[in-house]
Image (cartoon, rainbow, N blue to C red; front, side):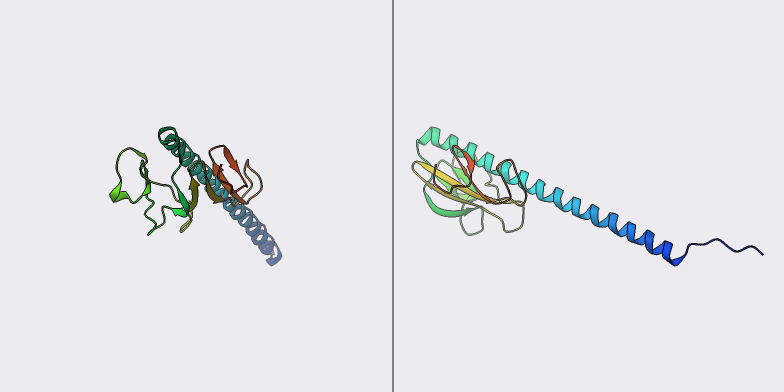
Length: 152
């Protein structure tokens, strides 16, 4: 009499363990890719804001004054960047440098602007290592991006 061939319980456990390991590695890889994607969005947003602030400075020889504001946050009236500085969208007048001030890629994440006549800083925080360094708080200025919160 011939025995039927079948998988043993041990073989099934090994297959399930290998499958679980592959799924775990896939999820970790996906999370890492999402962090890098959000960081790329942050760097792009700061670059766009720096370009708009440069245009503002070329026309006015100053930067919008602010003791510190979260750009685009509800209640801060900083939805649009115009010749009057950061203003609420319904009160926007020409010229408009940024028709929509970017907010961070995560919910309730905002870029913090602090500026004066001679310089500004835009605060943002990365989740992973970037070309600027390890995951940390960075500041965008007219002169570039670094970890100094001085208005430059």
